[in-house]
Amino acid sequence: MGNTGIDLPNSAGAVDVVIVGGGAAGLAAAVVLARSCRSVLVVDAEQPRNAPSAAVHNYLFREGKAPLDLLVDGREEVTRYGGHITVGTVVAATTRAADEPFFDLVLDSGAQVSGRRIVLATGVRDQLPSLPGLDARWGIDVLHCPYCHGWEFRDRRIGILATGPTSLHQAGLFRQLSERVTLFVQGSELSHADRAPLLARGIDIIETLVTELVIDHDAVAGVRLETGELLSLDALAVQPYSDARCKVATELGVSDRVVEFGRVAVATALDVGQTGASCVPGVYAVGNAADPFASLIAAAASGNQVGAHVNADLVAEDTRNALRALRTTMREPEAWQQRYGSSTPVWSGRVNPQLATYTAAMTPRRAVDVGCGEGADVMWLAKHGWDVTGIDFSAAGLDRAQQHADVAGVLSSITWVQADARTWDPQATWDLVTSHYLHLPLDQMITLVRRLADAVAPGGTLLVVGHHPDDIAPDHLLHGDLFTADDLVAVLDSRLWEIHIEATERTGTGQGPDRVVRDSVLRAIRR
Image (tube, rainbow, N blue to C red; front, side, top):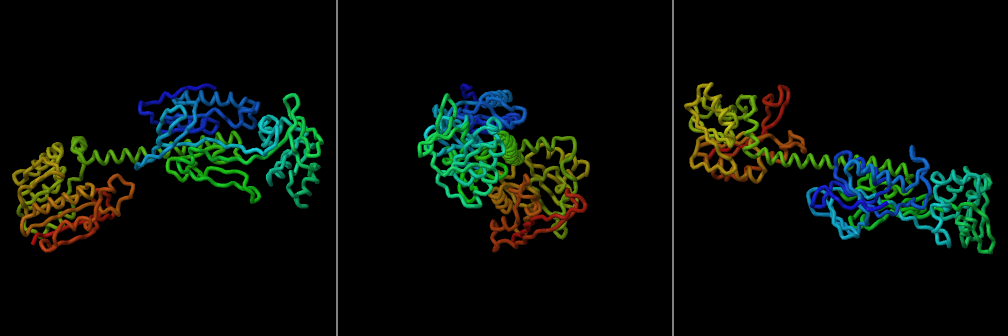
């Protein structure tokens, strides 16, 4: 079929998905992924299991097509949508230690490629019985699947070479296609229950061992028995042991499972779930590697389905990465500049309820609100007699806050300071130091609370309020930055502070009139 070469979408040799194996299952997965705008590399050793066969069958719309022609068409479909194919064998595979799956592969050419996901479409190795002449005719007139090859030998002389309990099943299936079926038991002991169905269907049973497959004019002519007798046949059916284990799977740590028929091991498959996912995050298996007895069209269907699951897995990872990036961006001034620069207010303009509650009995003096945003809390304090400093790192937010304060007529009681709370140095003290819903990673939040505490005057109050983490789903953008008051209290020395920690309920503000949520409240009075 020829090597299309490695021409990856980036110089680092990394793709979204590396598919190891370019049969029907691997190519079907590649098409789904490429059509989903994923970068895909198919690594194919060009040793398809069905290569000796003249045609594929029971493959809708491809009935009778030569197997290699089918693969050529499949490759064209993959590359049409931007997928990449290279001929080679993966000789080494490792997993990088990272938060998300990532893999490095080495090919026999020495090329190195990396991928975020691996799809193993490596098929199986058929282990045939040791019988002279058998290997050379495999897939031609030495058969295993009546659905793949049976029609072509209908009404002809078909032998079944017993390899285990599946051979009795095979005999019944091939008897549907021909009245001239012979079972060679090869030393197996058949019970009366085993023999009765065979005899009832007119299947001959030969106890004498077969010692050789006889070929004449490039076709099966029959089998020779250990007595020297030649029995004429047109085809011989044999059930091989199909082994899906491969070097790549072993090196990546993918587990396998034994497939049994009648309590006898007949195959080994890579152990995957319904989505094709293995025990190794990011590694999938499709086709005969996952199901040794899947027909060609079933293998292609599994590639199609698993390709969709892999894409969904990558979408979930892309979303997690985007959320992490957004969370980082949201902590920076540029993001808030953009938000506060919009034509509509970001917040309600109402005072945060915990501020109103906890300051109601306090004598108005000097206060500072760190992370004041559009200034609603600052203006409320100013209206209630406080001399207030509002601090935020967004110039746009402070401009909007100043406009609101001007309209409210409280500008004379307010000082605006543009500063980043993470690096702000108070260099002064206030009787009330407050911060509402300023959420940072916990280590940064603890550092901030320590700095806020240093800014509280003797007898003054520290009030830090945040969204309670139990009220937000674990996958929410902000969940990782939420805190409880218990997380922060260790910053304060109880000998110097009168400390109150609470989870206080509220309704309405920003959450809808019927939604009850909780705030994590740390309130501390310097002794």
